Image (cartoon, rainbow, N blue to C red; front, side, top):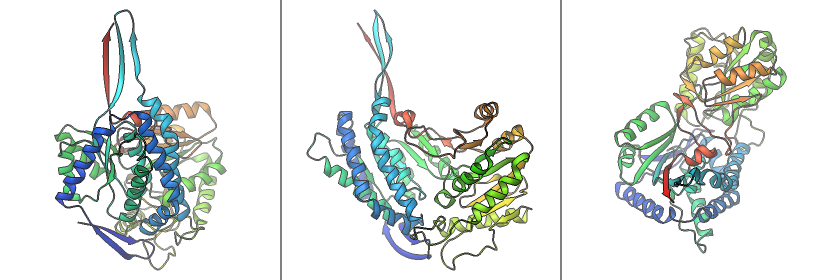
Amino acid sequence: MTYRATNPTSGEFLYELPALNQLQRNAMLMRVANEQFAWRRAPLESRLRFVAALGAALRANRDALAEALTLEMGKPVAAARAEVEKCAALCDVAPALARAALARDAIVDDATALVHVQFDPLGCVLAIMPWNFPYWQALRYAVPALCAGNGVLLKPAPSVPGPARLLDECLDDARAAVTHTDTPPAPCHVALLPLEMIDDVIADTRIVGVTLTGSERAGRHVAEVAGRHLKKVVLELGGSDPFLVLPDADVARAASVAVAARTVNSGQSCIAAKRFIVCDAVYDEFLRRFADGMRALVVGDPFDEHTQVGPIATESVRDGLRAQIESSIADGARVVVGGPAATLPERGFFIAPTVLVEIPDHAAAATEELFGPVASVFRVADTAMAIRRANDTRFGLGASVWTSNEQDSARCIAELEAGMVFVNDMVASDARYPFGGIKQSGIGRELGVLGFREFTNAKTVRRLR
């Protein structure tokens, strides 16, 4: 297996890198395990010095990191720079989160004994990362895990080797920046592992757990392999997030945010709004405004600062999305914006921003995750029907609710089957909040206090007086 980079804007092959062989894999596992032995014993403040140095390295290399991402994944360059900055901002807030999450929790303090819970590191964890946010997805796991004292082996997606190499260089720069302090080398490394080695790495005794961001199929396989060895997993999988527009919503604002929510990262985001569920009283106005906004988006070269929607990251993902659109239309869905007849750049893996309505319940646009700038819009009678439609999915990642009615807001928060509910705002990941889903959208949490504790041993300690 090789890690192969292709420019999705032109479809042209760029280069390829060889994956690790067995000897290199074993050497990498040994290195991470040895470094973690010292790292876990370092004071928290020493580990946090590395995190601060990593944030500085990311900012110092922001433009190079962003350009590699735009070249190999097609992310519009302004959004690519924003991804790098978001990672650096995570490093800024991580110290406060780590101190809060990893502090001892006192349980009992009486005449007999003192009892507390402390959060110890588990060991070395394999992180299998995706192509859509190669920096953010990796670091939103790695930074909390490192703060807790764990080691991290980052396995990047095969289609973005350039960003993976640059991230590894930033980790090296951060290690070098704290060499003359009491901070030991941080046990975090990028490993170009071939797919056929993953099961063996999970089974390796030096690996105590695995986290994956990816497809349902990949998540099931990783969970099965980890389960055979009784190892902890955190899975962040697919999403088909509902965006509910209730009768008393601010329709103009909801429609404007809906465009951004559907097309973040050119629509290639697990928490992008994908199913727009609109009550009858405001449906016509919302659809008109939303369609106008989707139609006005600038599609093209992601290196152009004005581009809002770039190409789909890979040819196979583009082809799969195109097939979902075409099958939904064949099943009876109607195209309002975009669709197969839309004009696109002659080269590259582009999909036009598309809005589908009148979608049958069995169509792909109603039942599957559409990973690109394609919106499914549904008309419902009232709030109760909106909640029912929103929950009629195997996914349960995030949900966005638009209403000025406190009673409807509270009802949606209580009844929506999702790991996150945002009211009058689009769903987004933030270092301060736990991130994750239920149902087929995943297991466990990243970020926030819960995420910083995810790969720790909550150790109960009782000390007699």
